[in-house]
Amino acid sequence: MKISNQTRHNLEDNLLLFFTGYSRSASAILKEQDQKSKQDDKSMIENLHFVKDLGLQSQRALEGGDLHEFARLMDVHWQRKKQRSGGMSNPKINEWYDLAMASGALGGKLIGAGGGGFLMFYAEDKTKLRQAMTQGGLEEVRFPFRFRGNQTGDFLN
Image 1 (cartoon, rainbow, N blue to C red):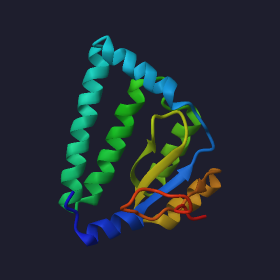
Image 2 (cartoon, rainbow, N blue to C red; image 1 turned 60 degrees about the vertical axis):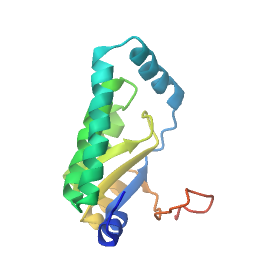
Image 3 (cartoon, helix red, strand yellow; image 1 turned 120 degrees about the vertical axis):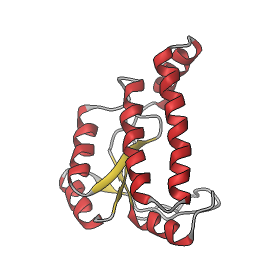
């Protein structure tokens, strides 16, 4: 992607990652998605095509420097992703997500296959979001952008 340095820096500065404390087997969630896809489940196929289009819209938003639109698309993606499987989220993850959105996040999503792991949010008022999520029981995991892939020691605590 062709993203300006200013957009990349703003994105890096305003993305926050929080560990939910939930570990999950991604294979179970992905297996359900795979089975439904192979059965030509119209709802699943439509969902996956919609998410593919969101990826293209996200690319355009980033290349155009529109980080508010990128954040909005993260939220749209998360709402659509939850429809794929009942195991994608749980009441506590939904509670944390709602807390973040009420505390300055402009958009966010659960990273990975679902069911646990990390919540990522885009927020320009990072202090307010950090305080709310910490009070909500989540630990922030700081991370730098890397262009060679993650390696041991990249995550900051």
